[in-house]
Image (cartoon, rainbow, N blue to C red; front, side, top):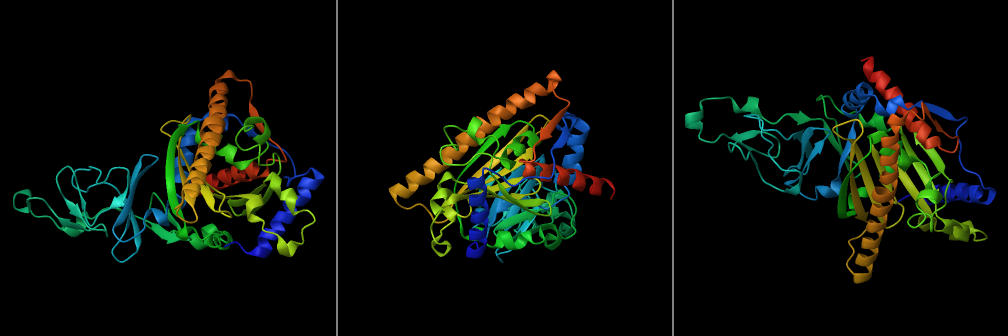
Length: 385
């Protein structure tokens, strides 16, 4: 769980801003060329040099609950198979048979002792080794050790399965996460439960992700969903390398005024969002309900795909708990998919008008500024490799 001293300190920062009508701010406004959102070459470089080169949070540990469980997914055209072996270890592979390239598993989760190719029945174990060739007497002699599944670098840490889509060298999570490791470790994500998942297409990935990184729009866009309970244009932001922790306080935080700090319970009043660069937002993990949003570039620069996983700290066993979980899940789905992504589609379609040559990120949109600076930084570092 989050340390009490830390949660109280963050709540105090938020309450101070609320009383003063202020927010955390960047030193200055920032201008981003609109071309950065539509340039097909830049979009491809972002996929090849950022998304396929850095550790991605592709799965939650709770999606692989026991030995022989697996998750198969598409990550920007890369078929990925993540498997928890009988030894409890998590491994990742390209979800591609080494015989003729068929995908071993359809997208989804499940439990399998072996992975049998649906095309010619070659069989692989949970370590990716080829253990059976159909009709070997007629196929001919091969060295099965040469035909194991192609491995991907993977590591399970803090309730998250991290995978890199290219290369087999170790992920280097210690340097990638830095002090953010301590932040994630406090969330106990391995002990949570998946309630349900939603998936949708959306505007270009940067347009979609931008909405997760600022609350300047809450009052105008989310009047019937988030605005009734959450503040607008108030953020408490801390960065950890490319990653960030953002606190969007609820309006109820004002109830802490006059209450001795030793009696505070900040969690119900703090809408915390942990961002995992470059494409994941984890909201609500201080309370009993949370949502993990994974935003992936789509097949074209103007599209994206978002997988949203709704989690509960304990399984909802009563009618009241199930009703609350469903209401939370529906609220998030409506607010993000029907409101944020609807306006994002408008933004995406207006690019061609030429009305803007640049977007302006305000000082109050500092998390947005931070993300875009790091995107350019990581892209430049990998272009120089």
